[in-house]
View (cartoon, one colour):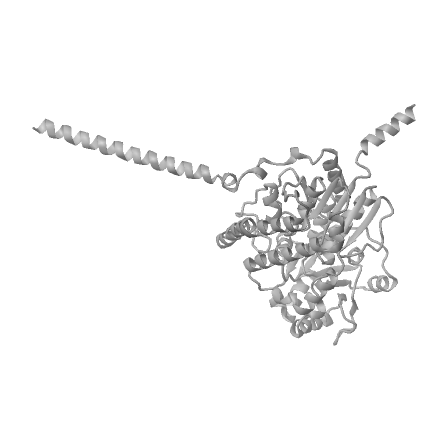
Length: 511
């Protein structure tokens, strides 16, 4: 009898085991897929039934639960073709306002391609049922309609932490006086000029979303979903790929949850050649990678020459993620590969420094392992991440346009000889690891929580349902201005009447 009671207790505690989950991460970029796959695999391994829409097939499906791919065939090839036609390094000086407008247009097209894909249309018109729908929030608002279509709660995942795209949806305050816009590099605290530009970006984003983005995505919902499906922005929770150790602290409403670092795995054994290379480096190793979207092989000749000349002078060995077979002028201390097990390399005790583009995944991984950083940001959130690195003292930043042999040598020498950066990196790592639960366990708990509490409407703040003019107190401000004006007018009238009466009385006395 006691065994039966114990089993019933265990079953009641795991009441959401086996939930049917739909995950949607359509961006054809490895970094986005890593985050989506890590979350979906983690949920499947906890016993859930996961269906995952993405551009990449899962080569090693999880052993627990059920895992089904809905493959966006052709997306990766389309993205690769675009990369060949346009060098991302040329975007380094792009205007932030134009970048925001361009990305909204590009992601609108990607969203339509996702909804129009044969495999997605099959799913939409199937009789499938889901307990929760998880969507990557990345300027793809029409995809939220999957939750309405399948009559399931909506969970959003922001792969770049809190930002204007999610703040508006959940009613989260983000004062432009100290919360920087996504594509801005600002000091901390901001200067007056930075606050002006940041405020303009805040207003621009609000207007762009309400006047253009949301209406366009509403049209996609009408076009690609059956009648009756509506575009609801009421997310039950937002899972944020952020943490105070990696991101600037900003306000959160109750249904915003930090799970930054959930994709990071414990270090594994390195391949034999890499293990030998790192073990034998008596002066240490520098790891250089520009991530999965930027390609080192696309660097212009002058930037490549600056790197080669600088690396050749170092006593440290260098691991360089290079996407081609040969690097002309390759120094003897440099080892090349099209792909490196980055997390496992960062864990090696002989690694002294990580030269990175400043992407959030790379930044998170280097903090996890406590390695100092030299960031060379180019586009997107990389410049903001680089500024956070400087603000927190565990690395330096070098502007891509200032990448010369002299400047690079100066930065590397400072990072390699001043122990402050390494010490700050280790302190950051301690902050990263000091949590009640692992990031993946936190994510799984809150997804289960949404299922258990049927969307958890009690977590939503009232701001979600307020019109814009009420949220910003426009009606109150107008009322107070009018009331003040009326009171001033009446006061002036009374004063004039009193003065006139007084003058008249004086005249009567004289007469």
